[in-house]
Image (cartoon, rainbow, N blue to C red):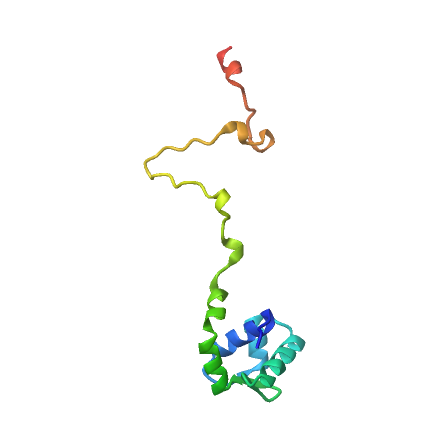
Length: 124
């Protein structure tokens, strides 16, 4: 069965539960609307991954075996792709004793509380 983000979230919530879970608990934990939850649980029930009676849902024994077999798909759920910095923006780390002075020329003058003076102004 090909997982959608909806069914992936539902399987994640159901796999963390020890038994049967109420639909409202699934809604609260997954932050998915009730209509989408019912559609997703019905799709998972058709694939015999979830036992769903209308109000309560749980993983079937076949669903637990399926989850173990496809666990690599759920391993990526904990990673937040939006937090990964692209390699082109990664700078080498500075040592803790290495001094750092920001380049004042690169800072927008409107953001600084004082006026920026050029080196020639300081010489006068």
